[in-house]
Amino acid sequence: MSSKKENGSNGSKRKLVELDEETLNSGAEGFTASQVFVKNPACVAYTYDDLIMMPGHIHFGVGDVDISSNFTRNIRLNAPFVSSPMDTVTEHQMAITMALQGGIGIIHSNLSIEEQAAEVRIVKKFKNGFILDPVCLGPESTAADVLKIKRQKGFSSFPITDNGKIGGRLMGIISNRDTAFIEDRKAKVKEFMTPREKLVVAKDGVSLQEANEILKTSKKGKLPVVNENDEIVALIARTDLQKNRDNPLASKDKVNKQLLVGAAIGTRPTDRDRAAALVEAGVNVIIIDSSQGDSVYQIEMVQYLKEKYPDVDIIAGNVVTPSQANRLIQAGADGLRVGMGIGSICTTQEVCAVGRAQASAVYHVAKFAKKFGVPIIADGGVKSTGHITKALCLGAGSVMMGSMVAGTDESPGEYFYQDGVRLKRYRGMGSVEAMDAGGDKRYVWDDMTTKVKVAQGVSGAVQDKGTLRRYIPYLMQGVGHGLQDAGIKSVAEAHEKLYSDKLRFEIRSPAAQKEGSVHGLHSYQKRLY
Ligand SMILES: NC(=O)C1=CN([C@@H]2O[C@H](COP(=O)(O)OP(=O)(O)OC[C@H]3O[C@@H](n4cnc5c(N)ncnc54)[C@H](O)[C@@H]3O)[C@@H](O)[C@H]2O)C=CC1
Ligand SMILES: O=c1[nH]c(=O)c2[nH+]cn([C@@H]3O[C@H](COP(=O)(O)O)[C@@H](O)[C@H]3O)c2[nH]1
Ligand SMILES: [K+]
Image (cartoon, rainbow, N blue to C red; front, side, top):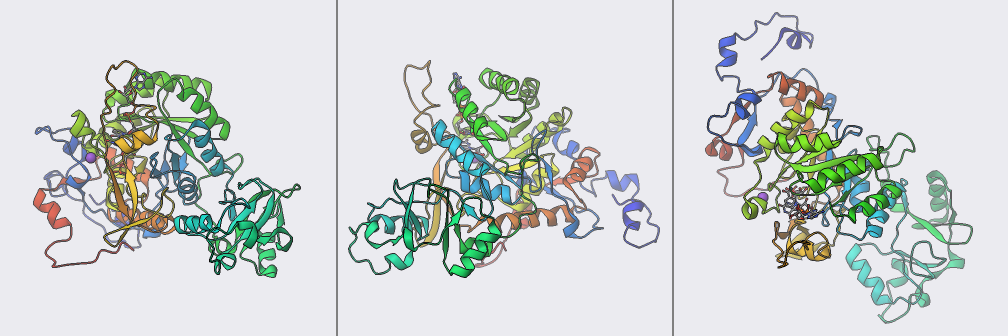
């Protein structure tokens, strides 16, 4: 596998004799992807864990590895990570943090049209250091309300406005100091808040630097930003400023430098109204969200959206075969989501008997879609950085994750404890619970007489992973190490080597898979970073 050029590149001028064809083709160097997936006499499909990659030659540092890659025809990401459009995964907080780290979040559609568009708008309006959607309370709220939110959200300062919402007239602020000694849980906020006249505020339009100065001199923890009518438009927190770093990798649109965001829609007639509201809110990419994307409903939706909104990228799916991909590409899709029944919460293969092992699905669809310049998103089934590396090396442009990014500070929902472990809820969008929460909008089949809901997912919980601000850099670094070990300097090079048979793989026996994970220990601790 080694070539003279690569080996000479690090200063060593010694001449290297290349491997002879016989050794190269004997299996000693592993097998090409087409040997693994195409010449496949046993008709077996493989998933990430079945495969292992052969090491390559390292002639560069891990810091030189470029993991940027194409997410759609027109969107490139510095970190090819996408958070899934699920109601326990992506709302604005997740989408903002994903985009700040160089990835992208897709807002789920288990919301009313207005709510979903509002989520998109919050991401688009994001300004580093400014909290544009602070939780506000009204003057008539009680100490009990304050304590409840404090418990649920983990923060303890709230602007008080006349209507209890952002955009209302500022009446005061509640902070830890105001609530510390309250004994009467029925006491009204207006009785113990710090009133407006005692507050230091900033005017709308203030720069982050100016705000920082005001906070420093006033020695306050929070700075409300108000407009000319004294209505609150944002809140700045000193703790945020302290942890506020530059985000050089952030995913932004080129024109107005706002964060990129996506949103999911379905294939019902009302989803055209949903798309209109999302586009109006500034969405950059729309994902048409079905388990089986190769349907007339989806093809019509792709055609409609591409014609109506040529500037918004449309991702179709999910698909697992080239023939499915073909119809959606012909309809105009700018990206394809690949994965059926392989997600951590999915029961589709069990319930519907349809789907495909993910490594095979990614390889076959990516290879086909490449001919049309359409990137694919390997969706679901990712459990480790190694899985991400494998997906990218099998031709994926990016990886979509549900369970990996659920259970973080940025995912929707509150933490709770079970058997002493801190957890957050995570559920399939086809679970009964998610269908109920979505108001059954997609599950009441017009042409069915019996309205039986057939679940294709489960509802569960995942362990607390802390903040994505640390977790995404860990994922990036892990993928960097993987590519470096494989002797690959970029995702583009991975694809080039995949299709020129330079990347080599092997299938692991069940015993080899066991050997490849932790074994033989009485007990151990697994810390990721
Ligand atoms: N990736 C995966 O393996 C899976 C993902 N999921 C997730 O669960 C959620 C729901 O997925 P689906 O059940 O596929 O939702 P869906 O809304 O695409 O399909 C549900 C049913 O409605 C029918 N349908 C859709 N549009 C229609 C129209 N305009 N007229 C008449 N019938 C129509 C479909 O043919 C299907 O029978 C999504 O978020 C999806 O991502 C669910 C199962 C598997
Ligand atoms: O069969 C399914 N039933 C469901 O209820 C369901 N909900 C989501 N998804 C899909 O799973 C992906 C997330 O999977 P992971 O947790 O493994 O990342 C997601 O990105 C989806 O593709 C579902 N699949
Ligand atoms: K599954």
